[in-house]
Image (cartoon, rainbow, N blue to C red):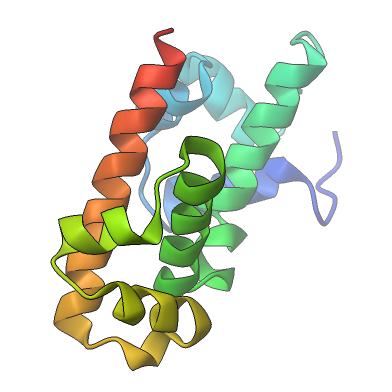
Length: 143
């Protein structure tokens, strides 16, 4: 196997080396065993034996954990999760603002201009948003 540019195995190597996610941890995330993670990152195997959906999920995870972590700001991530909570779970801006102990107008303004919200309020909003997303995502997987 050659070492092509854009090969997800190169990005997996970055995750394992630069970000120090262990092969065991990546295995827990991806559903691969530790040996397969190492062999894949070292170009000794491919994932052709897996269903296309699983390969797509693994390649997506690799992209998000390598380039995706540096290409998207923290504020953009929070905004994206707020949009998911609004769209998928019908959680209103009012509800998020109440949980975060901020004004709804502050949340609306944050969605237009991240810097409009003071750091402390942004932090509270991010914690609430991440907690609700985790809670709701866990419950939808169990139904």
